[in-house]
Length: 325
Image (cartoon, rainbow, N blue to C red):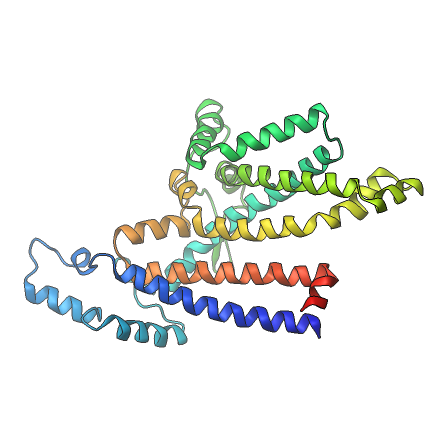
């Protein structure tokens, strides 16, 4: 019953949050510029041409009516047609989603495994040289801007050594209607550098969280009790310490993964990765409102789903959450 109440509460909050974000996003994008001037030839178009284009796009209506029409279309799964690409906006965003998803997923898997491992390694050896090296490295990794890190990875991994391509997505394989590059050797080589650019700051963040949690758990009474019973350090680490530090790591993984899906704009632009972030930047520059709104809605939905999933994992992993609900 407690878990059911948690699920119902989170779904209700998610619905309200999506409604508010759709309103804020719609008003924000419709208060910037006039897309008609990007559609017609401004050098040859007459005032009548501009008027007809404005009416065709529905931009002559009051903003509240445009939002009402947007909600009606949204209920039927339609975000309109892209002004620039002349395709259904949501289908266009979905066609780019696989590229962003596999980049973010690959980076998050690397960050989670490496960061947790480094955090456990440092946390079980506090004050030693390896602990100081890991802590110093995480501070440096968190301080480096993503664009500088991306440029250094290109310099070292592509220009100097020639091990990896400097941009693009490489060969892909189509599965279930979407293209995936991690299933080909060429695609994997193209994936390494942008994934590292996204993963390295998150490795540092997760490592610091894991280290702090490990140090705290290692000082707990139940760990001393386990040592007194003769339980091995390895079993204590993976059977007792790791589950106890998992909740903050799950939170960070959920939030950072959502951030990668939504805001990997810099990395996608530098590595010419054809994902949702690059499409969003191009659409904002061209005032392609249907694509921008579809992208923002998808991003908001992703954040809501990830946060709700994290909360539900809390309820599953920690009985105190179910009791408090």
